[in-house]
Image (tube, rainbow, N blue to C red):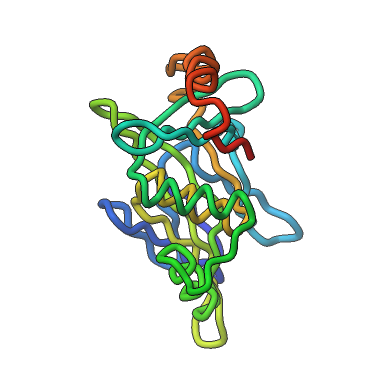
Length: 198
């Protein structure tokens, strides 16, 4: 899908074949849409995304189970203990004495006039989730850019919870996934007070 926009905004996609110049935007349907306000094109969310929040992080033998929910349904994916600890620390408001990896990434973005706009889980293959991290960058030597990066959902979540960026799942994917609320309830009973409920 190609959308033509004002040269004032450059949209780039990094990590796959979609690379755009200053006059066009190549994006998969479901990520972004453009609306015109007062003659300017503005990037907006599309309705085929479901906003989710982390509802539980529970320890497992292999690492950490992350449950995301929209208030009606929950999904789960598993991440390594280090990233789980990073997400958990941020959700609980703990400030590390020195910047951790995700803190350093956000500080670097800020130094270059960029910020995390949103993160989207876009597909699942062989039980592995794939996500896209959307950045918004603008500074005194660079025109505004919207940058889309291929990223792990765990890293996206660690960044999103630090800066308050929204986290989404593509609706068609969300609706195809099994509700794991029952599994969450069972794990909570088993783990007791070891869980983190944001």
